[in-house]
Image (cartoon, rainbow, N blue to C red; front, side, top):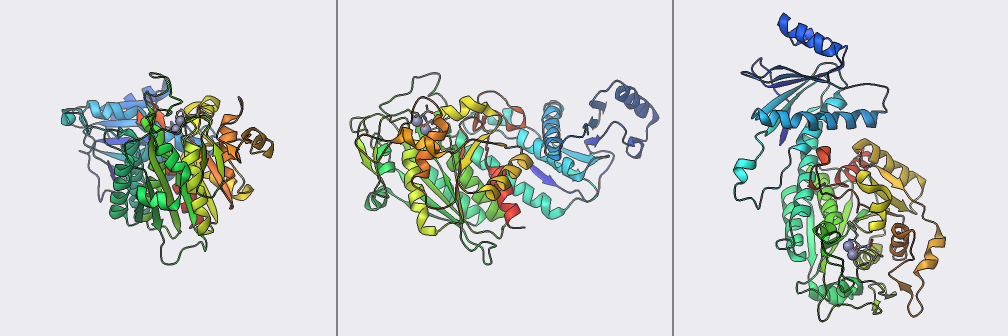
Length: 478
Ligand code: BES
Ligand code: ZN
Ligand code: ZN
């Protein structure tokens, strides 16, 4: 769905008037009987008031002020748009004007953003896709101080979220590790970032032991993709590196997951990779003056005759030996190699994002991202602020060194399994071992995939992470 600023609006356009209860709607509604009807409904505290549905939709949507912090106000606007989306579709509306009748411009654009995010569909595998397709294809935004450039960049960001969702929604039957890398190359070509893909041979030569160990049970080769956006005069001297978990399907390996509950949606396990690709797409499309590198290790995780078994010792890319006590803790194995690989860039900061642990999901559910790290207060606070702006909020967990105790192995440098408690944190601590730079770990196991509709975040892949990290990078570069 496309957002635009219309040259002029007419009385014939489908229109949503966005305002507060006390806004002056007479500027937009000349008809006295409609105005009386509206006053009556406003008196009864109605929030969505349909004034016409004959030749055109005319609707008033009241968003409350209520002294919310700005972030909550913007989120209410996005969620408000989700509420009217179904109604617009019922009336086969193809294009709608969102008219500011008394709000801040930020709320109006957030509303448009919410409408576009709600309108996303993944129809690739429906034979009757055309019948299912939403009629809505565009929304015009009318608001006094609106910036044309902002709307263009918002469109690119929304496309990036759509791409990330598409990647997550693709099943393994299409999206193997190699296909994921091909898709990333395609996203790079479309937006302007460059991509280098390492094949299995190269990964073997580099001795990425963690990635190869997880891949041992697979019939499909692994890949390692390097995404680069280096504009001419970047604001940062050292790159920001994003690392995304690309497990295209996680069966658990020989430590097999039980079916039905925990395996059904494990195509989600490359959501971190989807986020990193989405962020690079948005950053490159909008030509942000910030130097960003993305690293995506990718493979599926399966049992097989040659699969890694519990007790195996693996030598990782950086030489660390790891005792694999649970083959379902595979994300940290492939991410560890990517994090070691990142050292050569001497990064200013590395943000790694992954559907890493059921423990993170158990702690906060789908309502946010579990974050932790050693990058210092400034970086974490700035990322958390972006979390509020985008409402992809971070719940920061402790990152105390005492948790390292649980990762000691009797026969190797580390084991890939912590104790019974604090599983999200011990996973983060395992990853930290492979870093030598400021590091933030984001666990999106909870919010990456919605089994039922979750407002404008939709059903299926949510694309979580793209909007928060983009906001962070945008703020860094402005
Ligand atoms: N991919 C899973 C984590 C996950 C859980 C993602 C739920 C999305 C939704 C990860 O590879 C995993 O299996 N983690 C194990 C680790 C454990 C064996 C130490 C877990 O969290 O149970
Ligand atoms: Zn697993
Ligand atoms: Zn996994």
